[in-house]
Image 1 (cartoon, rainbow, N blue to C red):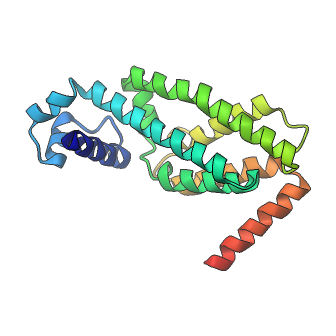
Image 2 (tube, rainbow, N blue to C red):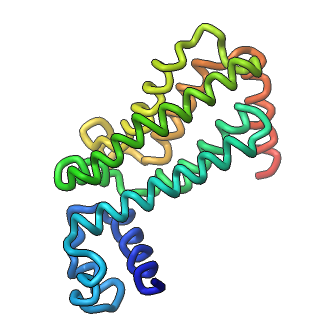
Image 3 (cartoon, helix red, strand yellow):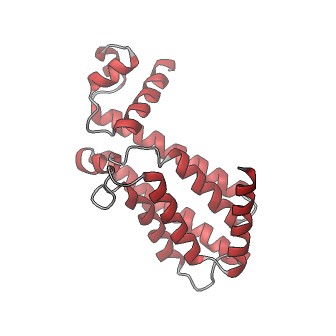
Length: 205
């Protein structure tokens, strides 16, 4: 089990840094200093490696975003915490990953799209409804539409046709997308709390 965990960690390091398409089973074995025979004891082929990687990543995101929603004292704080999580754990992923999944690994891609449609929409809908109840988000926003919109906005920076990696910094793009979305749905009360958190963050720097 320890060896399998080390393999999973090594795979994650390679895929996050270089994308999926460019990494071969030879590269994985070499990176981990193991034989390909040992690697094939755990995974029958690269598709199986990619599927395992995708599932682990989605499980991590599910656990962390659930924890944040439960611990945050209000929806504005929740939004800040999730934005920080995405910045530290998603924005540092090679932008080609989603393109590679969609084009070369359909089973893993379907896993991702189901995660978006099910957990992500449900999670965001709950957050938007919470924001309405707390008075930080506008009452007139359509929860379903804005949940889907936010997800697609978060995925857009990974599209190299829209934001070429040699021209745009992924972290900056994600930050701008978040700013655009959150400012569009907040009430004046929400803006006041949001700005207070910004000031606290600035004071801590």
